[in-house]
Amino acid sequence: MADISFIHRGKVEKEKMSPVQIRNIQGENLSDLLEYVNFYSPFYRKYYQSFGVSPQDIRSIDDIEKIPFIGREHLEAHSDDMICAPRSKWIDLCPTSGTSGKSIFFPMTRNDHFLFSAICARGAKSLGINEQDTVQIMFTSDNMMQPTKIMTHMFQFNLGCLALRVGPVGVEKQIKILKELKPSIIFGFSTYMLSLGRELQKQGFNPAEELNLKMLLTTGGTIYQHRWTPTTVHKETSKIWGAPFYSILGSTELNTGMWECLARQGHHVHWDYYYTEIVDPDSGKILPPGSTGELVLTTFGREAFPLIRYRTGDITSIENIECPCGKTNPRIMAIIGRRDQAVKIKGTLVFPQQIEETVLAVPGVSAHFSEVGYDQSGNEQITITYSSDSEETEKISEQIKQTLKSGFLLTPVIRTASKEEVEKVCAGLPGSKPSGFFDRRKNQIP
Ligand SMILES: [Zn+2]
Image 1 (cartoon, rainbow, N blue to C red):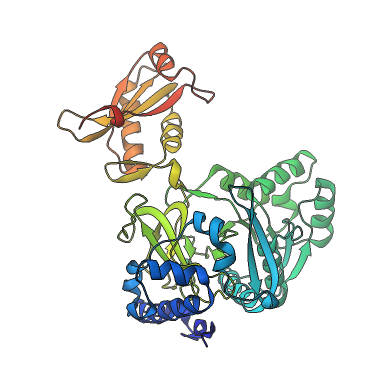
Image 2 (spheres, rainbow, N blue to C red; image 1 turned 60 degrees about the horizontal axis):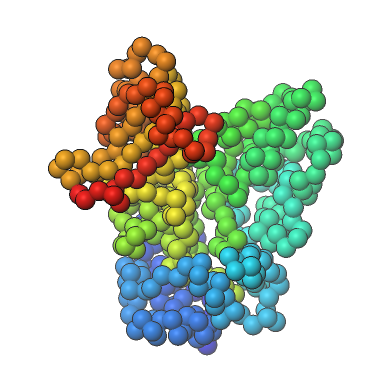
């Protein structure tokens, strides 16, 4: 009978194997995984049959392209039939609500629990977390918040840390615990840590001076933008608390934790637990390493709720070259947005809001709008029109050009206009400053 024990292939030094060794093991894991879901899950069995795909078709990891994608819509419609473990083997559940309002439950077995903990422990160890550490956990682990509960157990049982399970309580209680128990690590939502830090300063408690924190840890929201540039929240939070800030990539569906390492070069993917792909959000074609596209994940070794070629809807890129920390596993870079917010310009995925923010951040720009259309030769072109109170428009135009080139690989045409003209075009759009993004391609024939 099929079981999930294949996950233990590879044994030691998993994170320093050569790419060829890794891909060979992943190919075997994928074939076994298909056999596993064919055996236990009515959904996967029928779904793959309808596409004429069977485990025998998988001879190497490259054959993953033959397997059809699944998405959020499949979880919503078929989650009961996707589960591969009987209820008697479940030890925990994490619910999430679907768009129809019906909950989707992600059950976990003991094996899932142990594996998730072991995977996270690897990430934590690579950040130097050990039994000397006291971790103040500002997430709740009640209300079926399964991943944070497992993370708490991981700190305690896999690493031997002292876990202070404080949760997101009021400022007074946080200060009391910070002062009395002096944690070396705090772990919570980035926005919560930022507002708490500001509040502490207001109350005359300076975390950077009065605590000796080793690091801040967060999950559930991005603290990097573009490929791997710290966000404003990242920089300010780190400054207030006087400690480096590290990110763990996770989600309820995937029930995962992919950790940043000390080299700060992306979230390391534990390749024996996940297979990651970046695909074109429109065509679904696998894109070459380094490209920006939609993240697709396959879970190896998840017993109750395996996901195979799951389209996450997240837009990011993957680095496959060896990290300065010595690990050879791939790294998922910053999640820069959701699939349905992205626009493709000259084959590059961009987010209108990011372009707006970037242009507005250039000193001297008071208002602007961006337009995507076709030039006279039928080539796609982005035009930035801005107004400024400054005389130095030549310098400002050049800076906008350079910023868009380095941040988005775009070469825009730059125009200046009066403030009135920009305001007229942007009238009725949200935002405190006039700015807007218009895709004119639909109305133009290339
Ligand atoms: Zn690394």
